[in-house]
Image 1 (cartoon, rainbow, N blue to C red):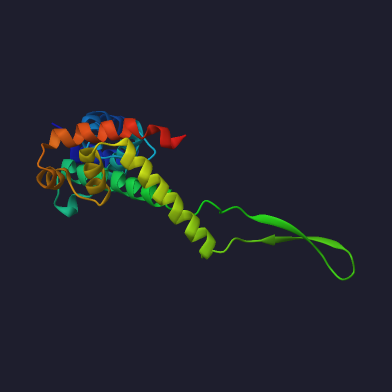
Image 2 (image 1 turned 120 degrees about the vertical axis):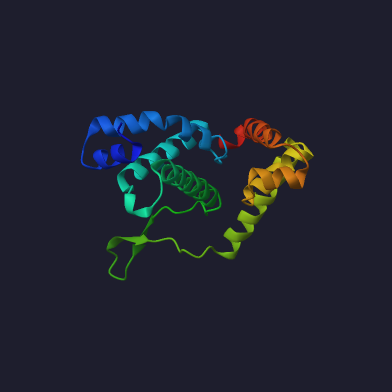
Length: 194
């Protein structure tokens, strides 16, 4: 009987059947892991897609020398890929929106017109920082007004990186309630994506 480890090694050699077999077999694991995460500005399908990328990376990079089963390695790769996507998405939300290159015309002493490319500074100006702070305070107020106190607590703990079992303990609720709460939060705050 061919093992998952053998299939991974065959897939690395270009065997399409082996690759498809593993992708199909571990689709359920990807879905199971994906349901444990919340992606700001995304939905479950986006998380599943990231998990699938993680599974593909696991197949490509699996090595029997690491003394781990393929299933363990795949679960780790799937989680890391999803966690990276969640982290990037939350960082992207906090970036200054002005990253465009502006072109300004400048007149020189000899009255010839030239175009000068002005690159934006990586360091936000005090005005930009104040505006961003005001925007964040406004966003926080909207979120507080939209969510129930329990939902707000779940969201805050989740965004701070706590795991479901830690949130359940701190909020004195079940893990299933957290999953349901995050789904409600996502639905209630979906208007923010527009």
